[in-house]
Image (tube, rainbow, N blue to C red; front, side, top):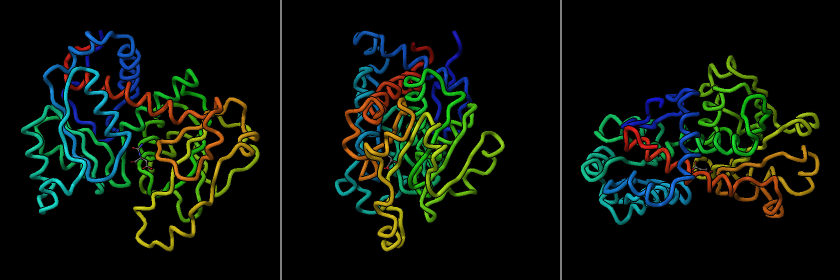
Length: 312
Ligand code: NCD
């Protein structure tokens, strides 16, 4: 058996994980799904997952909690800042320090870039980045890659459109860093004011083909295998008028869908606003809710691997 390089490890950036490590995690996720509840229970028994969510969350927090419960562990945490001492002005440093005393690993979501890296320096126990500013969301990218693999049976050779707020969307940065391990073609499509931050993808263009557009064209639409859509990150705009200008500028609906390859997979990290019309939800192309479900599976495997030296 390959050694478990996830044991006791922080998950701050997906850049820290090589392709063979990601593939190890995907194999273990498949294996996790086959275990019976009793076998799973052994993996997290008497262990505590702490979570600190300084920003709103539905899927990340709930799927981590569900994942921890599914391996027999329990969770404690803060998601309502008003009911904690953060409201009184307690620093991130002290809050992480205390959570570290009470738990075996910590999931952190915070509005600042670098917050998870900072927390990992303070905490004795592993830190999992559940979203750091507009910088990264590594476990979302892990589950996105796993979803692509499940849907398309491969990642190499695919053409992937990433559409939306590429300036502030942290999930797409982690996704791009993760995809850089594979032989893929990327088409980035965003309104001109929401284009990718060049400094954050520095070096990626040597690793894979990246095309940047402000609108999709016929050839791209016809040839792509995946359409990954993101919402406009309203909360990160310093000027609300700038948000008003781009709001509602792209929507994928059933008319638009007809123009794509019949088997295109449409992904979205969720929450969705108006960028994917609800009439796509019951099509075979809509993968976004499956993605949320895979998220729980992958996070169960990730927690088991971090908490146990040879778990699965
Ligand atoms: C994303 C996030 O928080 O970055 N949500 C998630 O974890 N699935 C995406 C978003 O908020 O748009």
